[in-house]
Length: 422
Image (cartoon, rainbow, N blue to C red; front, side):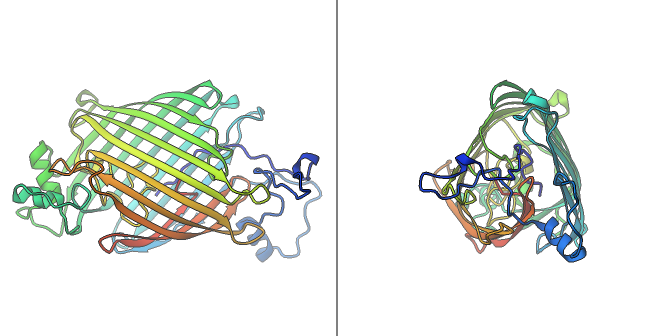
C-alpha cells in the first residue's frame, strides 16, 4: 500500500565543519549528511557504467525513485507492477519542506487491479500544504469480523459478527477514493487544514459464501441498514497538524502530531451520516551523535466514531490509518470496531557503514471494541517482527522496506513498502 509521503528538506553536506566535532574530538555526523552513503542509484552506476568517470560539474542528486512492485501472499496471489516516488523542494526558502508525489499500478493473479496517486506539496516557505490521493481498484479484502477476538454472548448473529475464531471471509469489490486536504501554516511547524473525502465501493460480493450463509459483513449490514452490494462514505475533513521532524520521510529526531475530525453527510452522497475523530502521534529519538541512523521511534494511532454509522469496510481498525501501515503481523481490517487504539515501538539501526543496508525490530499492540460486550482497552492483541531496509534514494531517504511480522491466531506475513511504516 501507499506509504507516508510527507517529507522534510535535506541539504547534503560536502565537508566536515568545525562544529561537527564533539567535545571528545570524534566526528559528529549531521542528520542531513549523505556523504559516504550508497544507494540503489550508485549500485546501478557501478553495474551498468563501472568505468564512467564523474562529471566535471557535480549534478544535484535525483529525487526520483522507480522500482518494480512484486509481492505474493494468499490474499492477493502473485502481484506485478511498478511504483514511483518523486521529491522536490519548491522555491528557494531553505526552510521549505520537501514536496513529494507517488504512484503505483499493479495487477495480481487473483485479478486484483490497483492504481493510486498521492501528493504532499509544500509551497515556498511552507505557507500552504496540499495533501491528497486518488485510488481506483478492483479489490479483494480479507474480513475477520468485528472487535478484538472476544466471543459475543448474545445471539447467533452476534457470535458470527464477533468471529472469535478469526475465520477468514473474503470480500470482492470495485473501490474508488478521492481525498484532498489543504493546510495553512499558522506558526512554524503548525498547520490548520480542511478538505473532503469520497470513498465508494461497488459490486461488493463474497463469492465463497451463498447469500443464505451468515457472514459478519451481512449481519452488520442488516443490523445497520446498509445494502450488501454498494455504499458511499463521503464527508468533510478538518485537521490540526504539528511537525518538528528533521525528515518526514525517515526521521532521526522530532515529533509529528495530527488530530482530525471527519463528518460524513448524506447530502454529499454518503449512505449514512457519521462523525469520526482521529489522532496520530509520532516521536523519534536519535541514539547516537556519530551515527544518527540509530533511532528509537514511537507511534500512536487512534480512530473513534462518536456519532452516526460507518459502512462495515470503513470502520476504524488494523491498517486503516492514512497510509495503511499499522498492525504489521495482521492483514488490513483484521481487528476493527467503532473505537480503535494502536501503539508501536520500533528500533532502527544501520547494518553497513555506507548505509546501503539497515534493519529494524518492532513491537505493536492494538485494541478495539465490538459494541457486543467488549469495550475498548478490555483486550489487547500484540504483533511484532523484524525487517531489512535497502537505501533507494539517499537524497530523500527513501528506503525499500521488507518486514516479516507475527501476530496471534496464526497471523503472520511478509510486508513490503517504500519508506518507513511511520
